[in-house]
Image (cartoon, rainbow, N blue to C red):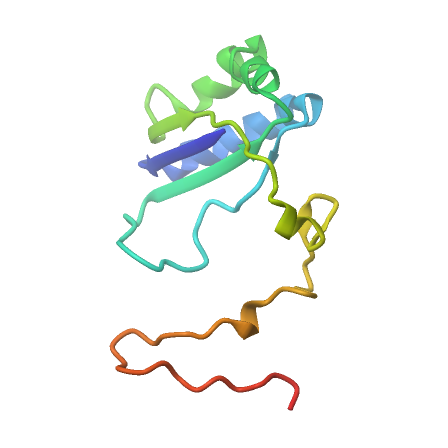
Length: 142
């Protein structure tokens, strides 16, 4: 589930987040956040100051539907961000694609290892925007 929105009232959104936490819906339906709502870097384009994106992973479409259409969400949680609205939001659900074979050995418990062990990030040549030639690579640990 991908939630994109532009926040208009942060206090109402905090009340919504508290109502969602108190509902216990995510633990019951095995939903959890895959990302924090604000980017750590923007590589292209501009993001409005009040924009927010979240990705919530559910085990299947049925669990996402059970969450969204549950009595608890529709009657107690969702109203916490509506009337007046906390902002404008779009909520979509996407099918998860299988993890490619070339990534499998770099995962622990379905996620990339936090220490970055075995990740080839220092091997990839880089280009500095505006520079005519890429910066020289410095071997790590030498």
